[in-house]
Image (cartoon, rainbow, N blue to C red):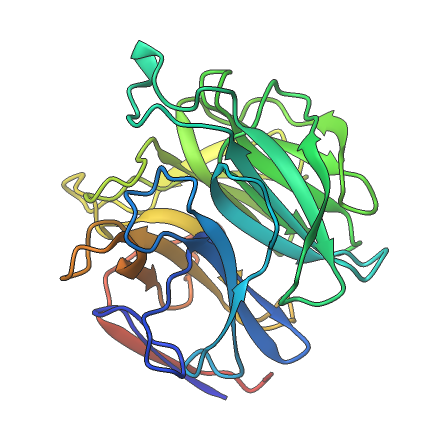
Length: 321
């Protein structure tokens, strides 16, 4: 299968509408790609009107919109939906985080931001397109409270949550999930980094890679991407390098990381970096902001990812699909 990806304009679905699916993930199940994200529409982002959606595609080009995948939810400010299929139950599990209300700014030092702390919630579905039903609206985690998060499933089917603990100096940690992925076992890594958000976790060979960014929160200039590496999902992690800076220290991709996606079901299939280019759309609508998808990540002789480079478009052909 040949993929052709462009990053200059917002992607469109099969109906000709702009795809509004941000700060989420791209997954591959049973020969189909699923793009999960937050719908922002014409809001400023910190709105109780946010909801979660899913698009499906056989080829990363023709996208079908499946609408609101978490219906009948209570009003809340919510971000970052991540979905994994649980090998133990065959259920599709959605982790997300939300806050009951927002003061309207992001001046955390002044006490602004969420009026009540962010909390994690988890929902399940028999289908990757939902509808999902929340089974735990306030999931306890070991490291105080929730924030930006992501999911990872290892070769043996064990699930892990990597997240930012907002009330704990924005510390990034990894926690092992229960076999059904509905809760944390409270087994945790040490703090990987502080004052960081938008984490991702993936495996390549014998190494686990945690990628994190500086605090960005809808920043139009984009954020750094720092790479940490370990021999076990719970660490210890070692800092390796930054991959979204050029030789002069300037941001390369004006985007905030959202996910590392694998283009296929095999561990040998390529990985791409995904980031949201905030305030990038010509019409000014947050829901139309462009999401950048990198060409397949390349690694050096030390098994570290090479720096990102901007590509208006790229193509790749995969024999495994």
